[in-house]
Length: 424
Ligand code: GLU
Image 1 (cartoon, rainbow, N blue to C red):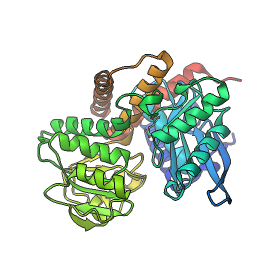
Image 2 (image 1 turned 90 degrees about the vertical axis):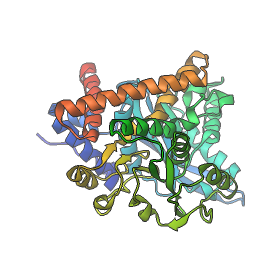
Image 3 (image 1 turned 180 degrees about the vertical axis):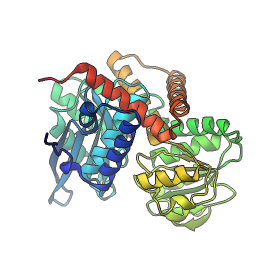
Image 4 (image 1 turned 90 degrees about the horizontal axis):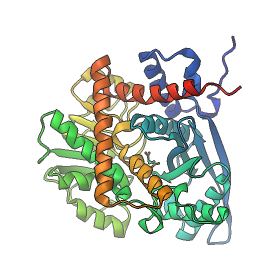
């Protein structure tokens, strides 16, 4: 029997990494062969050219993607990334991880991801608006509250979601807030969404430190990436008594053994937009940050930063994956062999964002809005249950924590597909 080759489109280091994770999980739970490829590969991808009239009159064409990995368990869900290194393979891997993440925490969604190859810092606000509206316009037939619901990711924010929501709403002829999440509160955004990913990371770090019998008070934390996830995790953890000893952005990193003043760093960032020259500590490289001696290390930027080269040199006790896919397969093996670092895998660790996105969507569909306390309480309930199920799976099958989380997420998607059957 010939085997179809379906992955040529996405072939890249990061897609191969996501596939390898899938294969290991599928083997670990003896997933029947006939369901494997169906569960593993993305359902479809949309690639679009996005011409934008620049402020100087020239026209630049940007390239954008949306990959919908799985639509069997509900509309697909996932962010849109604006970054100059976006590739279709990366977006596909990120879409795959969204499927396992939504499934693991029990959201009625499949996974998706979008991306545009662009450095958003190089566009004026007007150019950014045109690009975002054009992208949504191109996706009109493929997105919607019951089809696919985008959200923010690296390089995108509430304002961009507002433009996309407006574009879609103009098309359908009435306001349709449920088409995207991560919107401003004034347009149907949810209380607590902006901080949800970072706050969820902090919540789980606290819970795992309790399991490890390490008091959070005074614990040292190094955070790579100071965007939405990194900065909100830093704020939440410092309010819990932790000491943030290192932070970074793409311009460099800062180390201060006595603890960095996070509020001051955020104020600096608001005016200067980059951490460079913030002071507040000693300048170090991003690579040094990852190898900093600390109790908790939080990669909160891009994929594949923990590698087989630096994994042996990590000096943390807990690795909390705020980013998606920060640890390569080879690094995973090194960490497993070492056995002295607990890992909170991405699909669990950063799931707070999509969980509150789900709450936002529910509130939009019902036109009934919740208080912040209600949002936080429900978020904590879902994170507690997800953590518990991961720990149970880990103990029962003697899996590592990543394998435990992935097998739970993958098994539910595979079962849904099997139960639905194959449309002839
Ligand atoms: N981009 C976020 C993630 O990777 C959030 C996705 C969402 O809210 O839909 O989980």
